[in-house]
Image 1 (cartoon, helix red, strand yellow):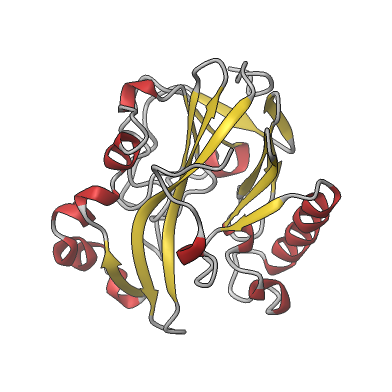
Image 2 (cartoon, rainbow, N blue to C red; image 1 turned 135 degrees about the vertical axis):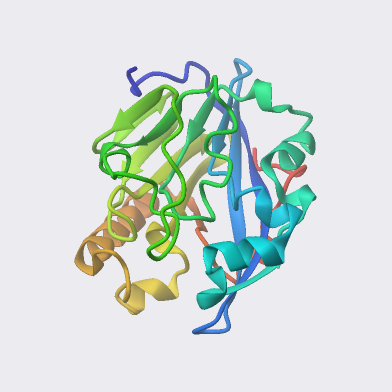
Length: 251
């Protein structure tokens, strides 16, 4: 399937989906876990990322133990209300309303429900999909790739009028970002290509490829500046509390 031009309508709004809260042990940083929903004037609904696996909302302690996630941090909040279906319901949507999934990369807090929309194509970078299994976290690789249609992107691709997928490797091999042109202006969703502004000064220490991450961030910020875009970072502790969240939307 071709990613370019897959979306036919123009974006009319963007919702930030609240998938919960996580505390990173090494820094004490508390971060929001986010996804996004873009709606178009032709009734399309594009879901970007899906948060933690459902087991984290069912029995957080057991899930953390099974995945050894306690070695990295604490899941402070992941309740049934933080699952994709509940977040979509805040917008008056049900899972079958989704017309496209975008997976920015395959870490645990972004792919929990990757296979829960079996009839919906998944847009993902070719580099990420080429991995034997989704990255998940650390050396844990429990998930198989869902058996469904994939739209593979390699480089920047305009998937529809006013929606551009941007290659941004570094944090992960196939990390992508998304630029959305709403009626009020442009919004850049960096995902974990830039989790927070301070990462730029920190030179993306600990990334899969630090040099690639630096180059990607520089390009994304120039791209945003040229379009006077509002930037929503992947996990910014200062930004997360003040972002509008579903059912509120950016238009």
